[in-house]
Image (cartoon, rainbow, N blue to C red; front, side, top):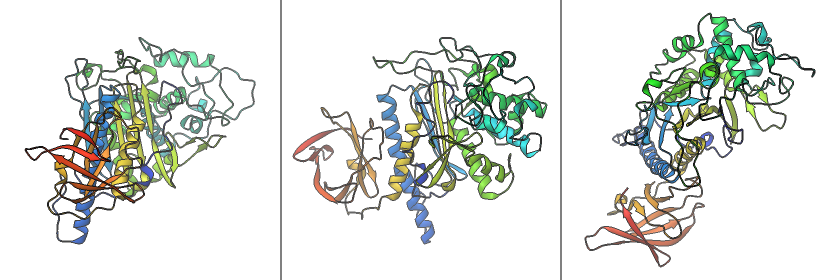
Length: 502
């Protein structure tokens, strides 16, 4: 993140990425499962690909529901597994007139995900022996000397800046998160005013998220490489990774075209205010990048490939491992940080990545290195992309763990799938095909895979509810109209009307 408060957590403990329970073949697609071949391994791959297809179809329906209920103008999302982007989709519209569809290639401000690129750039200099992570930062930036502080402290270092433990102020001393203009300082202004800012805390004593800190890391890259920061990261990270829609800045010429326009937080009347486009200027290393989720998924796959192959590509694999391990733990043991990466241990598995929050845009990149799975989310409104990333991961996990029901002759699950009326108790809900049966998806649910019940086909139009714990419960009957089409579902002697197919 960049602006906002730390109440908007980088990650939340309910994230399901770390315990996915399903490995999908690299070539899996979501529009159709591969043809089943005769070899058992090929059959297994086809089954996993089909499972992924069901999970992603449920994800699409849920995300679109979240978008509509939350009045989010546009969302783009992608899932990477190993070397492939196995699913990517856009939802809603990206321009002010709301008629330009969002796609995986739509460009958004990714704000603090920028910090991952800045960290990679610095670690390239570290590999070359040009910087030492524990040397005082003033060794590389003599001008970056804060006002005198009477408290005893170890030096402010690059490691401290990368882990947000250097005690630095959260921001350069300018009100750039204040609207309506969001005026960011130039590089020269940041340099000229840092000497009047005092540390918030002695170094290495307190975790304090700091955009100023990562701005100084970017300044260090520029100083030791001898090249302007934007030129350096473009030539040494963006272009080698083939990230054609990623920039260390905001492409104003694409605003309202390929780049989504920005909207503010949800008002009480359900609307969102229009926000002006901002220029990150001198804060670009911390919060200035723009990108598509298609590119973020490629970035995720690069990290997985680097670790798996052991071959240098932009970084050495050992350097990436060093970045993704914990380098700082806050005194309350609640916050862990690597070198640029946020780090969580969830269910015994490491989850790393970063979130972003800038005026008009929110984003999230979450990676489970051991599972080689990443989820990228970007939106053009001030809402919660982490919840969407968690929901996608949870649906993949739930579908991967679901034991398929035996097929029942004559039962076509697509006949029963659809959107049903939940009024007055809830809004619309959906039945979707799920592991040989059906399951419920509530488009307004914050956690779509939480305590999922299933419907087991019994034959004809009859199904049995299977509870989340596997207990067989009541019978559910779908009813048809005179034309033979499903028009209601009956449960506990009450009915819900089918509104439309999926």
